[in-house]
Length: 102
Image (cartoon, rainbow, N blue to C red):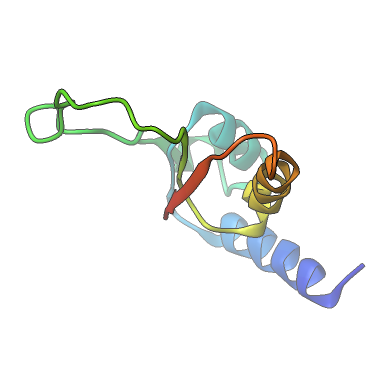
């Protein structure tokens, strides 16, 4: 076990147990956090939201190269190296564009 992984788990456990409130963005994350939190009532689900008046699709031409877009946290837990490895396996067979926003 790497020391950083151990430290991360320890800090998570101590932080969740000590927090008066924990905000999560998905029901799955709430299910993970709830048993580790001070109390189940301390966990509050606030889903990510998009202002559809400000952000809406515009008509445009189809791109000549397919684009794979990842929007989220850029962290080891998201396993983004697997996405990059999969794109690398396509090299020479299919051209794609990877874009990351996090």
